[in-house]
Amino acid sequence: MAGRSWTGKAEPIVQAWNILGTDLTPSQGAPGPDQRWDFDGGFALVYLTNSRFGPTRPVIFADGFDAGPSDPDAMWAHVQGEGEDTAQPGFRLAEVLRASGHDLIMLGYHERSAPIQDNAQVAIDCVARATHNKIGDTPLAVGGFSMGGLVTRYALLKMEKQRRQHQTAVYFSWDSPHRGAWIPISLQALAHYLKDQDGIAQMSDHVNSPAARQMLRWHIETVDDDHGTEPDSLRRELLSEMEQMGTWPSGPRLLGLASGSGDGTRLPIPTGTEMLKVTGLLHPYRTTTLYAQTRLVAHLKRQRVTDPPPPVDKRTNGLPELDSAPGGRLRSFGIARNALAQLGAVESDHEWVDFVPTVSAVAIGDIDQPDELFTPVNSLPPENSELDGFTWASQNQEHSRVTTELAEWLLDRLPK
Image 1 (cartoon, rainbow, N blue to C red):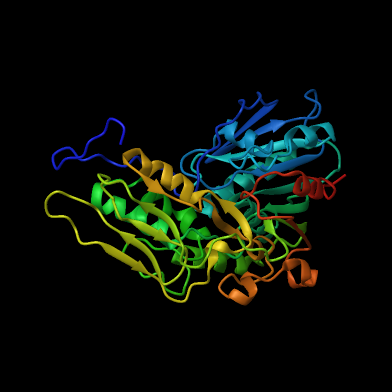
Image 2 (image 1 turned 90 degrees about the horizontal axis):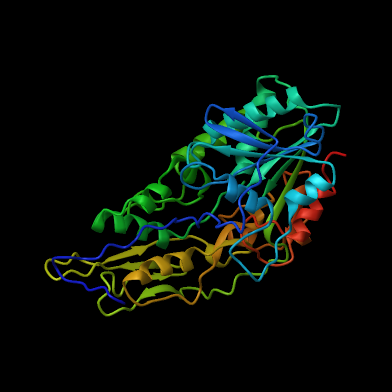
């Protein structure tokens, strides 16, 4: 507890953290763009192959989910393959794109957690600007990382519904949750519990933001909320809107990249194992324990000198073992451990957990069903997917990380 003490009069407060990961701390800032396009609700940073002319072979990369506005430095670092998993080298895609004659357009939002429909309007404005400014007849490639793939999917769908020309030959999604994303119910419950007990609202608000509710297949709004069997109402509305518009844009070739393995390899997380346990003797949340997805997923306890609240045991029923599913990983439990460890000892032997199952990223299966969730997609006929083409990682990688094997696959399929 290094210099901290806990008494009934001056109880320490846990520092908030990002429940869906954290912004990258870039090794260097983004270089100044050749052009900046500003829109209602967002912006685009344009890096041209020839700054004396406009874009000739534009590739639009839409930012993913987080809280607050898009950070240009973090966006650049993402495209350049930086990440948290130091064991996985990245691929400097921004540099390679420009060297191969493509114009890089990084699309950001004023609020990344806003409804996907709102940020899709930013994407529509960006696509319209790119088609208007484009020199020559090479069509666009439009897509994004994680939520950015859903934002651009919706944007192109809406443009086609409105009979607007988007001049897009390739749509791509990089580890996007087409079938839904997964944040463990245990972590969602912890976020809401911290809000209830100490007014630490950031993580709870993050989980309950519109975009999170639209992406997550299973979502709870409060500690006591039943996860249920149906997705959140905002997700159902989004899927319904896309279905009414045609589900997928019909003009471009549809490509999907998964950061998860294609051979069905699970993350090494035993069923019901302790993912995080607060052990510090004077820690205000001592004995709080989070488990890998099973029936009992969390034991939540707030220690107080007087009138301590009763512990909460959070249970679920019938959910697949999504923590260990093949897919793009987040260091969710590691980040939670580091934040809680500011107040005392916290153990976590399994920092990384699945976020976007492989079958979700390549739109080929139902993550509700274990027999589909763990299916090796490399053994399935390609026509089983709703995409025209897809690929996967050789092993379960960091969510949406730009690696050599995935980047080179996409580069080979961009408009020439």
